[in-house]
Image 1 (cartoon, helix red, strand yellow):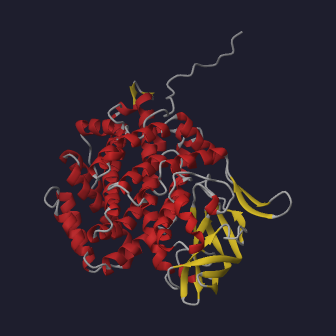
Image 2 (tube, one colour):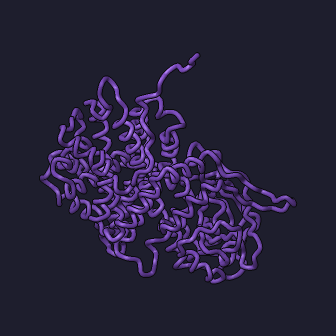
Image 3 (cartoon, helix red, strand yellow):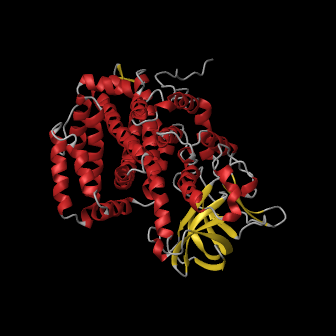
Length: 540
């Protein structure tokens, strides 16, 4: 007797063993255009490795096996360590081997290294996002430490710039590679760091005694953290190593790990400083200024990370739609579905062009104009792209239907991951207030913005109208309109890049889709085909 109830068919294969770089035409073009063409071969190799089934499985394993807090060892001694699944360590090895944590800070860094590093970051984001947190903070902290590294830690300079990942519980000078974390937030104030109550009392020279707490202490297994504390001269920045120069553990007590919505592979903690030792960076009272220098870098990575998650969600949706049949056609052949997928692809075309123009501005940050471009558009990008990611992944889920809502799919993890980038390093309102501050206080910013928009003036009526509307708002910007101003600034930044770099049909379609409030725009068949081919590297 046969008990077979049905035959399984019309079930798409999961997306694995693809090249994450070569399948993304917009990314390939952006890397070339913005000055990192020298990295194409390595990016293709990284894309092949990360797109493999084995790498994707590491991402899954790292998230279903969350880190574990080890407060004590077997003898009862304080340990204050974190245990990770082996998948975490393998992913971290790949990130460090690809220099995502320090590529742009090499003494002989090539022109375009910031762009190349952004592309590598973007590829890793499509596989596993939690491991990007320690990499981002290390990347942001390194230039500050290159300037202010305390003398007792001079031997950290070499492992800080290495391509090795070293998870051993050892003093930093004995390790092959280092990670740096950050601790800013306290219970009584998140973005309002001026309310910090952690106290710093001078011991000798740059050495201080720290007493207090941090409500969010990122990557507690890091070799050192940069923290804010109140000194006699005001809020200051301190270097707090895990091990002191004499080899003893610093008095940083891990109280618990956060139970987060997403970002499950990454350890975020609460800590108390019980007479911990820290070294002052810069001068007393300079804490916020130094932290803001790092904040721009971490905020850029938030936008990059969200874009990477969106790109992966689109890739999964496209791969499914090319296989799944409904009503006699594949999903990608259905007119309404084809419009949805094409519009999602077009949205990412604009984001890619904009983000890599921003990466080039960071690469050329010694130029006053580039530094100002980065200062204005980094919080703009973080606000707009991180916000856009949540509904974008939800749309990708709908392409897969019920399968996309189940944990067998990658999409639930991508969806849970999305809000962290919008919250971390300053939530939406903080980004908008920062944009308004730049517009009001940075000399030359309005002239820079005018030059950017006037360069493409007359190419598209929707863009020209949006620019006139923003100019009117900027005559007397109101704080209550901060979100509208920031969003419009982002759209104009993307639109300007599309009009400069994309084909006229694609650029004009982007402007109409994103800037015409009346809606109702349909992409024609030729443009749909072009977009879907570009989104699969010509293989779809």
